[in-house]
Image (cartoon, rainbow, N blue to C red; front, top):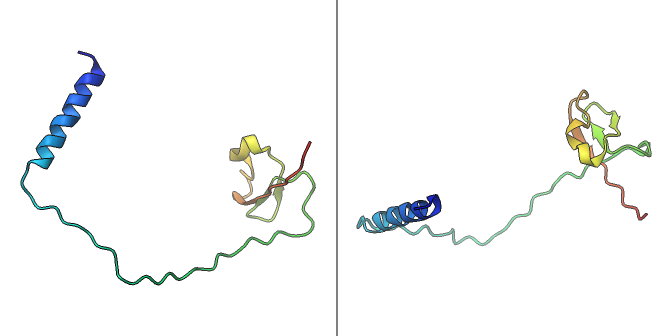
Length: 91
């Protein structure tokens, strides 16, 4: 037998054993309070003097020019990334 067939048979056996235990299943009910309270999310404020080639603002206030493909290295020595800067443009 191949491994996939053995695995499938084991899962089926466990499922049958779990379902045949005779224990009652409890159903969790949602709260009747339908009130949804939106929470305000603080929007990042970036300074006006962002360098044209910056891709991220670091936690210490400096900027990183790491490429988007290499985001792990952005601001690695400056406390980590505070905000990534997205620039939309067409080529």
